[in-house]
Length: 254
View 1: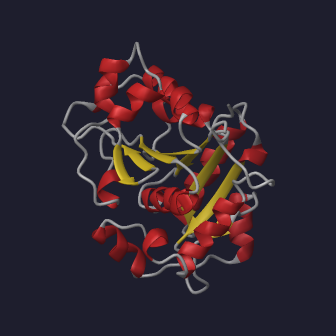
View 2: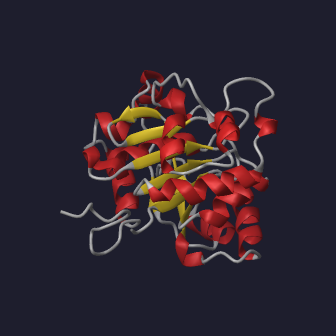
C-alpha cells in the first residue's frame, strides 16, 4: 500500500495568507472526493484552520497525547473533525497552555501515521522555525513557502531560504508562492530577483473575495472553483500530483 504525500506550508512572516492557502489547497486536492485529505493545523498556539473551514472541533492535537503509544490510522481517525466526506481537519489545541504539552516527537509520529490513511496531508504551520515546524519540514514530500511581494516579507523569505539550504532538503521539492501579487504593488523584477534568487511556482492575485470566504468559513476553491485565485491554487496543486494521475493509497482489492 502506497503512502500519501505530505505537503508542509510555511511562511517566514505572519500575515502572508499561509492558512488561507493551506485550507484552499486541501480543498483543491480533495477534488470533490477524488482524494482523501487531512488538514493538520500545527500552529499550536494561535491556529485557526478549523475556523477557516467554519468548524468547531471537539477534539484536537492535545487529545493525541492520550494515544501516543497506540497511534495508527484507526485511533487517529477519532481525533478528526470532518469538513467534507474525505476531507478532515486535525485541529490545533483550543485552550490556553495546551500548546506546550505537544512534543515535536508526537508531530513526527502523526506525520508517519496520517499518510497511511490519507492521499494528502496538508500541514499548516506557525511563522516561526521551531522544532515542531522542522519536524513537519523533515517529513514533507513537498514544502510550500508563502510570501507576499513586499520587501520585509521577501527579506524574511531570503533568510529562510538560506537556512533551508543548510539542511538536507531537496530544493526540487520546494515551491515558492507569492500571495496577493498584483502588477500595481509588485516590486520591480530586478529587486524581486535579487531578494529571492529562486524560481516562483505561483502568484496568487489579490481579491476581496478571499477574506470574505474566510469569514464565511468556506474555502474559495470549494465554493467558487472557477475563481482566479482558485485556478491559481489548482495550477499549484497540479504540480504536486504524480504524472500518471495516481497518488496515495492503492485501491482496495476487488
